[in-house]
Length: 392
Figure 1 (cartoon, one colour):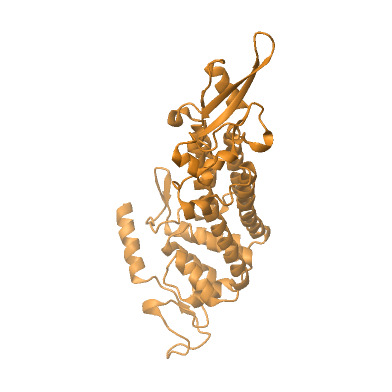
Figure 2: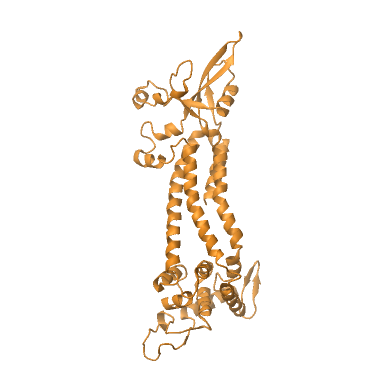
């Protein structure tokens, strides 16, 4: 998402369709307009900090914030130059690429394993007899589904295919994402003259239309420009120009949005890392944690003991792969996979289905250590029949 946001921002600041000409300058007529506009855009314009005076502006003594007399010779210590605007599209595009690189790296490591294994298992439609091809979609038969489930089981248990490096790379990419957000915020802050980090706070406290705001300092709409040329006798002539920076109308909206977007990314990335540390600690220890994680995504009618029985002997890579695999499967397929992973479609130690078939440890008729079959729930049978009829 961040890649597309920065890419769209790049397109906006380079498009004349929405903002017209990027710069328009008014001068004394001694220099052709197109010449001074080109010069001011590709060099720098400037404002005068001492003329950011709300009282003078409201009284009509100043035409625009930061625009006023500066003397015949420009004193660099008394002015603020704005050269960033010509680099904005390049910086935004570079940041878009930096957000996309971790995604490319992870895709090259993951290699589409989850998508290939879960293909055809994201719904409960089952073909009677052999599989059926419907356009580009293949409806699996019961035998094909069982074969696919056993393939997934073998894949998870095969240490050479699913090595621990799979989860290590994922955790590495999550840390890269978190650090990348911090890096991008720091780069934008340096790019905008150390004014970005406090931009959002100022907007929240003062709004957009509260006198001379920080936006006028960072993204001035009207600036000054000085063009020097030789006169008829060889003396240097100075031509003062006042330039309207239409481009900054878009720039300020983009960077205000990016401030809030990067803050949201920072919170989400931080919470993702926190969840990753918690899952590392509890994935093989907590029955409640596994119940919450798996039932949250696929609320199949399985008891917490079922989740814990299947996952307690898994290392973190196997558990994580199974977790991501569950996101790409429907509830019925997910339940069937768990039954097969539990071993021979049976669960021991009274760890059985919840709901109508629920039996707890010590209930009469079943002793601890006895194995019980795991039949389909009635609602699952109805769902399968209904989907099969639709598939026909």
